[in-house]
Amino acid sequence: MAVGTLTIDLGALVANYRALAARAAVETAAVVKAGGYGLGVAEVSRALADAGARQFFVATAEEGVTLRATLGSGPAIGVFSGHTAGDTAMIRDADLTPMLNSPEQMQRHRTALPDHPFGVQLDTGMNRLGVEPGDWTELRDQGKGASLLMSHLACADEPTHRQNTAQLAKFHAMTDGMAAPRSLAATGGTLLGSDYHFDMIRPGVGLYGGLPFAEARPVVRLSLPVIQIRTVHPGESVGYAAAYQPDTPRQIATLSAGYADGLIRALSSRATLWDGDHPCPLVGRVSMDLLTVDVTECPAPPERLDILGPHQGVDDLAAAAGTIGYEILTSLGARYVREYIQ
Image (cartoon, rainbow, N blue to C red; front, side):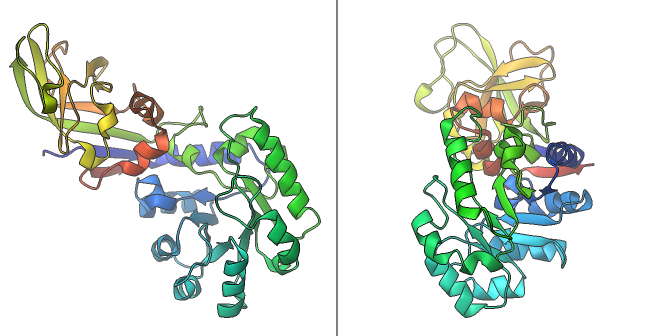
């Protein structure tokens, strides 16, 4: 089978959810946007619901409709993008809770679905989504019926960054005295401590084994099949642009995976794959469907190599590419065979 195998450990996912929940004496929601961070929203959300999650968050109403079809009635599903033009029927029919982000969205929701639940996202300094402080002064009374008041920290993965305390203070200023439940902390905010927990934490990447939750259990393993092994001699080259030329004869394996599968070109000549405990350097450029890897030092010709696994997690691989674990996870392609273990 010339496709990679992506193994997703749902038991580790649940363990990470419970470990983060144990750090806060408040409700623990789960963020499952981008198809459960690329791992399969149906399988991920069912496992988390079975573990006790009753509040989920997605990025868009379309994602919410898919999630509702998976979870059925009962769990609450919040939509970070709010109530955008064209969302009304989806929000109503799938019983979604939009996190309203602007005066325009608040007006749209009040007009189209006056009796439907809503939350409000407040901009406390990230300048991305959320009602700005100046607008909130006039809209605060309308927010009294919200099921949640939330904001998002820009620098929570840097615990000593001054913006964390600045955003915390602004969130207090915008929401103190209101009866609605409040939420400020995603994964990083959860780790900052109880001052940031309010009434709900909503971890995302930490559930899937990513930083800044360094104690997370690994959730993914990606094993890639070897299609062919050849000897490449000095004076010869490997791959596009003749990017790799050996000084001594080397055994070069060609593997079935490439940037079409989420293994981005920035990994070229920088990543390491593993044959058990034996590291194997990726040599030459990542192409659309293929990788070339030096397997000279392997004890026997390998049939498969791991690019994610016990020796290399998503953040390790991301560091080799100069990116973040989020990008690695959410880029994992549709061609992999996905295997779920409990």
